[in-house]
Image (cartoon, rainbow, N blue to C red):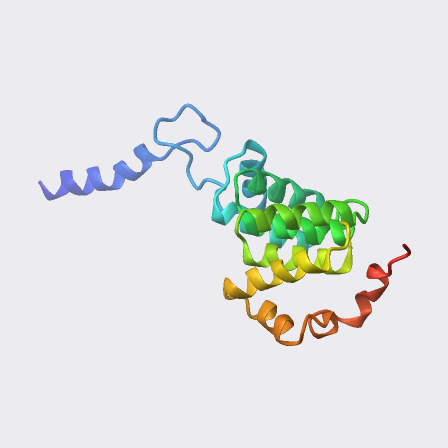
Length: 182
């Protein structure tokens, strides 16, 4: 009896293994490519997004694959993931995978703010204060910063406490972007 059990135990794993190239196997794919960047990109392109897929856009950006990051971020933003909206604003504002586009960046910031994202509120408040990508509106910008501070965003509270002195939250190396010519 022991010999029969041993023989069955030794042959069972081999019988249950699926051929990697056989998509018709009811048992699924052996060792599926489920956690790679390419898998996340394919899922995002299909609109099959979740927190893990959306976070992969960050890695794509950091490795310089900006077009792929845009695919992930845009599909995640369409599904309501507000963090990816702020990443799209960052990409537009820094010409990653496209041209420098402060208007598009401000639109992404506004979309995130309207969806209730405190970082989106803060960034859109900065856009309004500077008139960067949108018409300058100091009162609306301050109100948006206040809203982000009330949501618990520390940098927004820091800016509010500094009486909205933008130099307290942004490096002077970016000042060239915010020069107004009107």
